[in-house]
Image 1: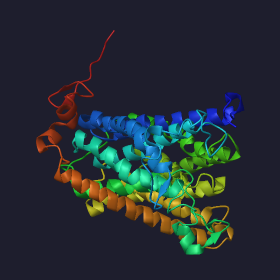
Image 2: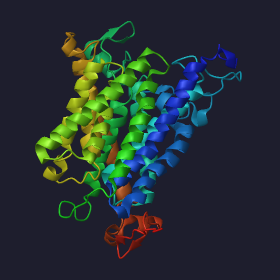
Image 3: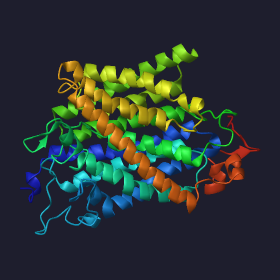
Length: 441
């Protein structure tokens, strides 16, 4: 099966390639979202951090990323990086026939295309926490090391049959036992609550605490310089997220349809939840809040997209919108400079979505009368992801601080990282202020 292209499920193949392309679009979308949120003197650097992640991980994933994520298991923690190094044996087998995906009747190379985009966007998310103040070279080195030591192992543990999956040797099986060769109560992470959002959110928090705040944080305004950019970025993220969530059904089927509806419902409800919270707290419902609410809802529904009903997705999205709106203010109370709210949106939203499954899943959820076992598993797996990501990121962050160093100079930060690091400016400037040229007829 699979040698003759006529035998492939071309519908599934096409859907997965489109989904991969949608997820890849999310990273430029993130660049707009983050780029609009920083000050004008930092917009290019912020966008370049996302594009840099695309460059580094697009190479690393082919060399050892796929193998570490989905290669032969090593201790339940990682896949063997040499097992399919450079995609050896991934695309064609020893007879020269195309390898079939284990998830459907389409070529396995399509899975590689899909999964590399997840690794890219996850790492790029972290950049928002450390905006305006980090050496670009240090960021690129961090990207290569972090995706290798944090993302690939966690992807293997959750999706590759490792320690945090439903494997008979996994954590869930240790807690509630094994049935028919798998965990009796298997954890649910449909598209990346732990692997993507908790992972990136914890990494962002660790780096913020390690690197320190921007000069003037809490003392001078650091408002978004281009809110239309932010809203455009949110729109591109929402569009790309259909590949993220519906694509994780691995076929053009009813699960993909459910994931699509749940993704839209949760994002829509999160907009309302965020705006209502803003209105009550601040007296205004803002465009930045609407854009942030979209992302909060998308984050929360990511692990749950195939496990909830649409009504459950609305509830989850509304709760995530409200809680994330409250969480982004914690940085001022506790004094950690999470520049673009990676912790407040991705860590908190990822936890809400991952743990919310234990309440709202139509199969196993507490609110559906199935007891609290799934909830226990979801909480334990979320905590395991927090600890793993936190420890690994701390080690990497400390190593970079003691070698390459993280911070640009104070003069560079004040003058603007775009000009100092990249030798460019997003806008024509004169005396530090924007010059707007009007063309009159």
